[in-house]
Length: 206
Ligand SMILES: [Zn+2]
Image 1 (spheres, rainbow, N blue to C red):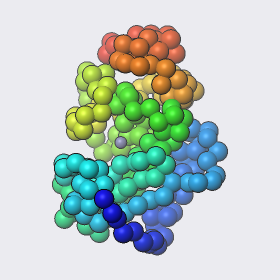
Image 2: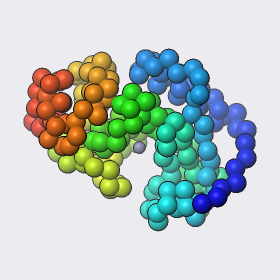
Image 3: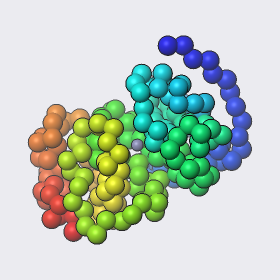
Image 4: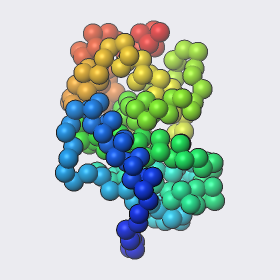
């Protein structure tokens, strides 16, 4: 597939990018100074489908690939997605995708478990504030594989918030660093227990 891209200036978006990079770098302690992510604005649904090489659902508005992030152009947001545009939420989306870039580097591009990787991006971009907080966590551990299920976003961010607030940042970074040691869901449970000292079960998230 061939794409035609050109550079583009937007002061607010650039400012939001710089703020997010600084805040995320503080969390991940990466010292990311060179080869920072590029933001690629995608014009329409048709181009998103061609870039991702599949028919995408209308709520898909951004993703990361390697160290770059792709966002549906805010100008076409209402027309080309099922979301309603707001600048605040768009900047959160930008930070969410940038957080994936940091997780990618720290975990050496691990893609599982999906709930952990999505949860980190949701939590760090403050998207929990835009979601309904569940009374108790009961539906995130199952989301191990990335299967484009919108329900993965319901509790993942709150689960990560629980881990960071109760058990600190260092442990979650260590978990990310060692993520690729776990080859499947069962091995991940063992790794999780080794790092946190408790089992990955819902009772331990209450
Ligand atoms: Zn994500």
